[in-house]
Image 1 (tube, helix red, strand yellow):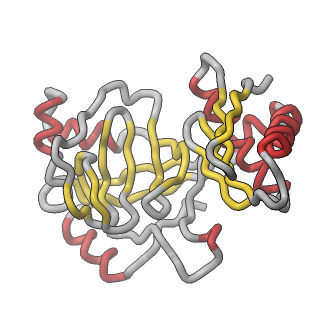
Image 2: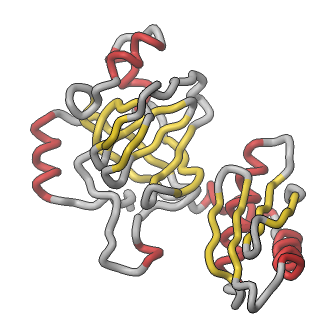
Amino acid sequence: MTAPLQLRPYGDAGLLAGVRDDDYESRWRTTQVLASAVRDARPAWLVDLVATYDHLFVTFDPGLADHRGVEAVLVQLRDALDETAMSHLERDGRTFEVPVLFGGETGPDLETVAVELDVSVDVLVDRLSAAPWRVRFVASPVGTPFTDRPDWDVSVPRMKVPRVAVQPGSIALSGRQSIIYPVSSPGGWRLVGRTPLRLVDATGEPEQLVAYRAGDQLVYQPIDQERFAELEDAGQRLDFLP
């Protein structure tokens, strides 16, 4: 059974759908599968949509629809979701191996975070790379994968003063989440390493901007400086394991 929705207008041409359920996984699955259903339905009024952990924000053309009409479509699509659709995120999720050079200039916060968590740097790296991180959603800036995992039970505080610019490929922690910065941008997440692989490809179709999607898994694989330089020179893009 899918989780109920709380729908409310958000401006003249926006609608915010909040998924209400006590279970975190159910909220996330409903949000992401409903987003896929809206994209697949391709309603003429759809301008854009953004899906997060438990909210779906839809913008529409007010010349083709109104809030009530969009609400009706979302409820209808939600009611049509079945268990097969709800389970496909985990079942069809792909695995991406992400080579990471931890610490040093590529991960300037690694040692400090290790101290805060009362573990050694080696233990922290082992924990970060011990299990896959689930991509929960892809958001700004430009295709950032927001990930978490059930066994990561510690919370890492953000920086009090964010950095003006973070290098592309930086692996970062905040709270119980991990992200990879796809492009250079400001950020206050704690930097523990960096991958030499490119995440963004702006030369193709919009849906091919990044290779990963909600439900996929990222596995951080520690590498040394020599391997980092080799991969950086090759200019390879992050892709999933076949």
